[in-house]
Image (cartoon, rainbow, N blue to C red; front, side, top):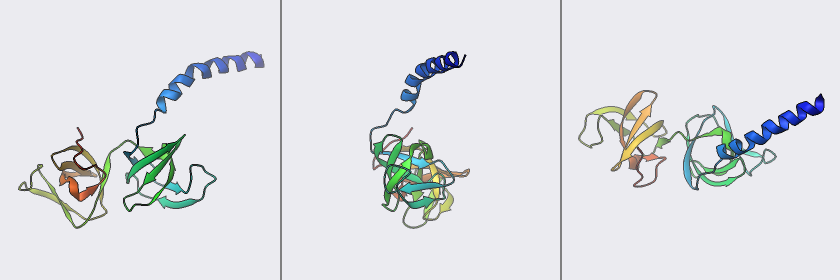
Length: 161
């Protein structure tokens, strides 16, 4: 009976293996990601046996993935710090962080458009619809358009639909 169960599970695993491989497809580096967990440790190398050199307590923080090693991702944070994180701690959700001085969130992607909100440096928001130097920027429902050069989390000239 035990042998029969083991054979059954082996058959199920064999069927699931290709799906698991497809789910782990790796993007071409570098690419943008964000922290999906409430807490995420950055390590000095690609393994749990490496010491943690930073602990992030900010979900949605944008990161730049610069290297991939199995289930580990070497990331760069907005301040230039680099280290390794497990892939399950990262999301494909595009986010950005405001840099420099207070930035303006406008009602439309135009420098003359009405100001909806003012955001301080360090504010993290979700970005979408980036084109022609502007991104839609949403901070917990308070949204507007921000100049792309005011945020870290998007490449110069990049467009996002």
